[in-house]
Image (cartoon, rainbow, N blue to C red):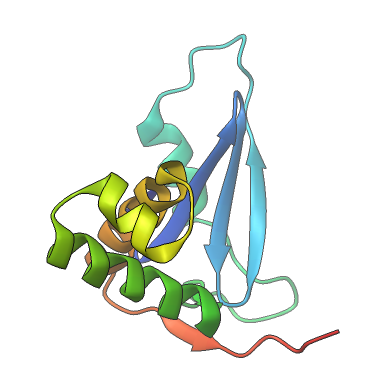
Length: 122
């Protein structure tokens, strides 16, 4: 997971990258056989445009408000307790989840703008 050009990018697996733009995401597939550099992939991402709309940069990422609240709660617990394991115990979640939320917080903080959106309950 990393930020580039105001967008959130998630490395899903070999040859598969998810670009979070607005409340949607775009999957970018690249060949794992050819050595494609990160710079080339980011250039392709930077050139993405919405179909049927005038050329303009993609909107900033929009993440569920609940996710952002959980992320901030995890950051506070980690800051207060100074331990991933202690924060995990306090929050009642696995240590791996604490690490992932802290990584997300770091990436989100590096972005110029992230919108919070409400997700409907089903």
